[in-house]
Amino acid sequence: QVQLVESGGGLVQAGGSLRLSCAASGLTFSSYVMAWFRQAPGKEREFVASIRWNPTIAYYANSVKGRFTISRDNAENTVYLQAHSLKPEDTAVYYCALSRRPAASTMTSAYDSWGQGTQVAVSS
Image (cartoon, rainbow, N blue to C red; front, side):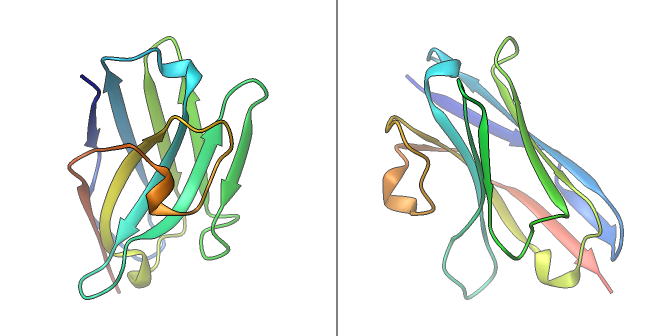
C-alpha cells in the first residue's frame, strides 16, 4: 500500500524559507511522477510543482516559478519542495501526490495517491 507522509510545514514571516519533505513507502519510488499541490481556505487545490525521473524534468506553477524548487532523492524515497521568498498568498495546506502516468500533469485527477498535507502559514 502506497503511503505518502509530508513534513516541514510551519509559520514563517514573509520573505522567509521552508523546506517541505514527502516520504514515500510501499512502491518503487523512481518509477512515478511526484508533485506538490496546495489548497488555501475556501479555494480549490492547485498545482505547485512536479518532477519526473529519467530524464529529470520539473514543472512549476507560474506563481512559484523562480521561488520554489522541487527535487527528489530516489535512494531515500523522498521528494522535497524548497520554498524561498515566501509570500502571504503562499499560505495553504501543501499536499504531496504521486502519479502512475508517464507524463507529468497539473491536474489533481492525474494523481493516484495523496499525503495528508502539511500546513504552511506566511505572515506579513
